[in-house]
Length: 286
Image 1: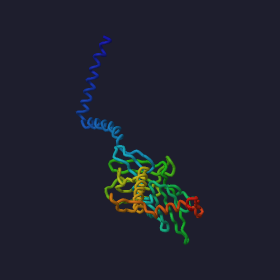
Image 2 (image 1 turned 180 degrees about the horizontal axis):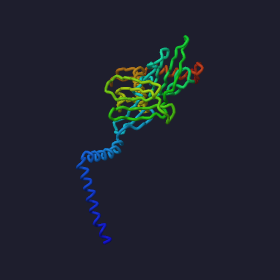
Image 3 (image 1 turned 90 degrees about the horizontal axis):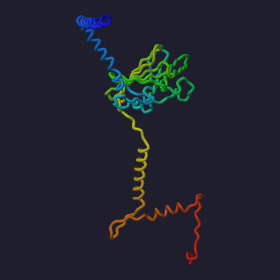
Image 4 (image 1 turned 90 degrees about the vertical axis):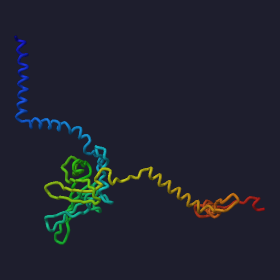
């Protein structure tokens, strides 16, 4: 009797559990379906995250996890490495001008001739120019460095967001959004306020993976250039130094006498400009 009572209660508990689940599903079938869908959705991101986003290669490059290519921010900038250089920003004060300079890859300093300012080796610099009493007062503010910048990629918007801080692990001062755009023109816009970080939006085809990639000149390319120049110089000098003449066997080429004489003349000269003395033998005097 002691051992049989639990066996009788077991199916009763199971039946009551089954009835309760069936009753819940009958009363609210949408809830059960939604819970099942949420469970599947929660299990999906770990596998998808392995192939989404990008991996920071350095402060200027980001490698896509899905293998679509590399985003090089240097291709978005101009030939001097700037996206914005002394760009005027809206200012609420009439006698004050606000200017922005930003380079995604190259650290710069402003002003260039005087480096003891907050804008030394920075990625973004905000210049506040105050006109007061017939003079101009410039204030240089550091708005982020390249060291410790953080990358994040939005797959749906095709946008790479890079944040720049004054110091590593500090609050970002500048946040730049690079959006992949099919348009060949590059457009910029910015939002500047004292309450939050400086926001910039850059739309460019060079913000797409493997677009506008800059080709690095490696040792192999340099060797090929030197080889081509050497072969070209060989044929040019050879055509000038050789004189064609016709023989019974056909046209042949022989070195010009003047070329050989000129080479021998330069080799026979002393470093101080004096000519080398020639020693005559007894047979030469006869």
